[in-house]
Length: 332
Image 1 (cartoon, helix red, strand yellow):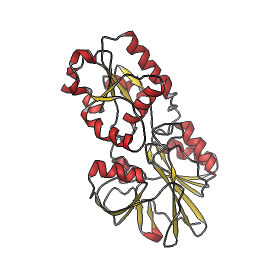
Image 2 (image 1 turned 180 degrees about the vertical axis):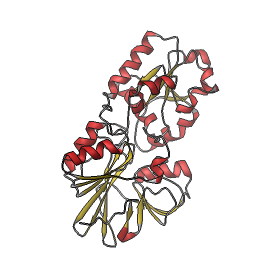
Image 3 (image 1 turned 135 degrees about the horizontal axis):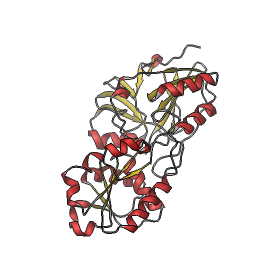
């Protein structure tokens, strides 16, 4: 059966693109990270949370029109039915189920299957063709329990209360998840924020995600930040901003922190392996459970996952999409 989806993720019968890198008349957006959600589209279809994120980041008029679609509610567009299902990546992130003439195609966007109190939990969707990400699509990537990573941070902080602990996190998704994990681990003290974090943390709270006592780090004298946890963008933890912290311990929360050489080269003293993407095992388990006969792999380490799929008797191929070749992804 010939797919009704092009390899640049254009839904042919309705001429709509999924996460297009260039402005398009019709765009279906899986989630709010900048490598998937761009400004300048004519009409955008997305979840209410993703629309709120796009408007917060890019402005109210960042697309011609917005149409919000709740999870699990089918939308008929000509002879294509579109339904969103949670992807578990960040708040509002969606897998896109496309149905047309008996064929079911799922485009996962970015996803993870592990629990996360700041994102709607992943729901498996069976299909004929699965378009899956592969950011961590190598056997070496097997993420630990994120709460274990947070407990390790808290043990170090308790042992050295004279230092500040600055965690490099992306402002959308990762920052809120790390804060939520700290709260889940029983950390109820104030958490201090770099200015770049404030707007999106406030949006998450407006959307019903409780994050506890958050404070702007600039409002606090340097001495008072000893023993405290500060959340900042990865780009800020080594610039002049971090010099105002007392003897800071530099940490980064990312799936890439499992690559020890990368952590060392980045000057990271305390790597925290906390990822918002599926690891090697999650990718394989998801592919198997969808019962898809054909797999298109994008956004990362495609070759190993394509080979594994082919060894399982599935048709599989890599996709090379412009937006996904721009370097490291925002929500790693």
